[in-house]
Amino acid sequence: MSKEKGNLSIHSENIFPIIKKWLYSDHDIFIRELISNACDAITKLKRLNSLGEADLDGKTDFQVKVILDKTARTLKFIDNGIGMTEEEVKKYINQIAFSGAEDFLKTYKDKGDADQIIGHFGLGFYSAFMVADIVEIDTLSYKNEAGAVKWCCDGGIEFEMEDSNRRERGTEITLHLGQQGETFLNEYTVKSTIEKYCSFMPYPIYFDIADKEPEKDGEGNIIITEPKALNDTLPLYTKQPNSCTDEEYKEFYQKTFKDFREPLFWIHLNMDYPFNLKGILYFPKLNTQFDTMEGQIKLYNSQVFVADNIKEAIPEFLLLLKGIIDCPDLPLNVSRSFLQNDGFVRKISDYITKKVADKLNSLFKSERENFQKFWDDISPFVKYGLIKDNKFYEKIESIILYKTTQQQYVTLEEYFEKHDGKLNKEVYYVTDTVQQAQYIQMMQAHGIEAVVLDHGIDSAFISHLEMKKNDISFKRVDSNISEVIKDMDEAPDEETATKERDILTKVFKNALNKEDCQIQLESLKSEDVAGMIILSEESRRMQEMMKMYS
Ligand code: ADP
Ligand code: MG
Image (cartoon, helix red, strand yellow):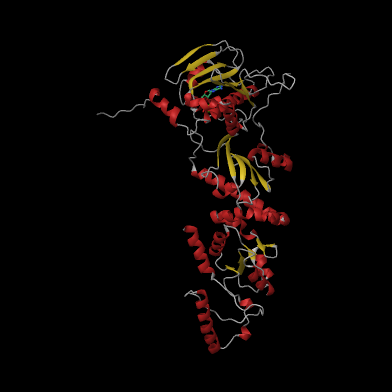
């Protein structure tokens, strides 16, 4: 056969079911897609207006309305944006995967600063068919000469188009909900889905129920309530950090995360170059009941919610924090979920990690007292982070605090300084201040303070630290008899020692009914201590490890 070249052809009757059923993992995202389109339509119109290409006659009450009609089983999305002409419906709607958003961006690419347009792949609109049997469009373009158009499609491959008598500029999309969309006949489902995806979309979104019974007061008078937008069109994170107050940060935290405790502190991220990223990271209080930080990082793309806690985009340890990250440059795939570009994601991670480390360092340097106050709450996060991320480790390694049994917070350097050469790079620690109280006292009597390492993460943390700095070692107070409390001058001679050791070994083996116990004979400086039970650090840690894996 001679060589041939050509174009692949796609049959919409084959591709359509795929789009409808398989493209999106969650049914509810049609709400996000249709409201995004409505917002895009408004953004485009605003843009044209600012370029002098559209005359709005001063009418700029831009908004999106969502109306549920339970009787008619319809859900409507109405905007007063740019609208579509007949040609545009043919071009952007009838041609699947032809994105009007991309087209618009290309046309106006070089003309002024663009507000973010959300659309991208030219597929979002069709997500409506995941829940609707029939979808109608009624639209009037801002172009005066264009007539209004109606479009209707039942999810097959045919559509109908005709003139419409619509008068208002903008677009009304009507979904006739089918069985698949049954749950969206419930107003709370619709409302909470809008709140989930659209909380920060840039134009006010109003939700209403068609033919709603008016609300009445006790005397039967109709109560008129001002409609209230479901979203916050100018979320705090989009503002300049120096124009935000502490009160605003706290309020935003409580509203966004429904957490009525106060956050400890926060970091406002605001970056334009080399990529665009805005957001706020909050350090939450430790959940004292479980000793855990409960994180939640909400990822946004141009004020449109993408997902919570995406491991691929955010360093794992940061997921212990609470925050919003909005990155318009985020490489999303068609379903706006999984990310495709590792290199880019790594850059984002590095940037955020650096910001967090900088904040911790500045707290340590200029607000040491506060830093100490926060330490108990943030230390699991910091320790987890330095184990998981070496760059983070390097940046904060020197400011890690240790709480001593005297309730002081010291760095490792300060700990050794405090002991003034007494300790040979050994850090004495306790895991339970009550159980190990006697050991603590004995060490204290000889001028040694132990540090408290009682969190679940600590055992992994100290092992990590020992590996990184191979000259220091952590020893639990009951793991050996420190040189500091031994009395070298009073040591018994070899013969006496062997004798006594043999006798004591027998006594203990009998009493404990255990073969593997060893007696070590030492003279101690403490007169009120006759003997100590010790368990070597290595074997205890080994046992702990085994327990963890069993
Ligand atoms: P995308 O948003 O990725 O471009 P969609 O499938 O969501 O793709 O929408 C296709 C196109 O249809 C849009 O780019 C836009 O040109 C047009 N469109 C959809 N909804 C509206 C609307 N409410 N107002 C005006 N145009 C719209
Ligand atoms: Mg879209």
